[in-house]
Image (tube, helix red, strand yellow):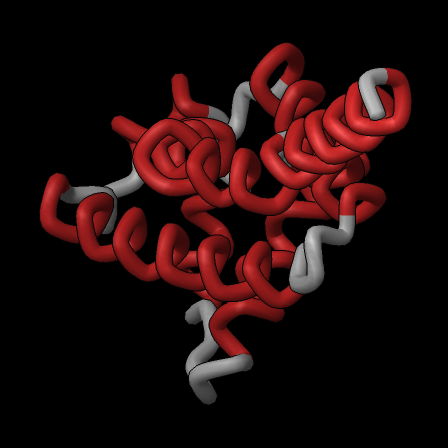
Length: 137
């Protein structure tokens, strides 16, 4: 049985793929649920298969993350971050490597865009400028 964070990402990959009318094959899903130490025992696991699966899953995660966090939805971004942290710390499945590769190559930038503090910074600067204007006029 997978932990909640593993199931979270399997479902997010499926959701992301469904946006483009694609899906995981049973073989691909089985590979994602395989413990890293057991990958060498899987005769279907080749570098080419892994690269294709990485690209497929990264694209799906990028699409669904963008949809989930549209409009700077911080709550959704926090949910993704917490699940990613748990996956990173605890998972031994191939899924973890794929998610971490996505996060390091694309996800981190998406997270910054979704939770970026630039708008908060600009708001604070605006408040300070109004305050200073009121004080010195």
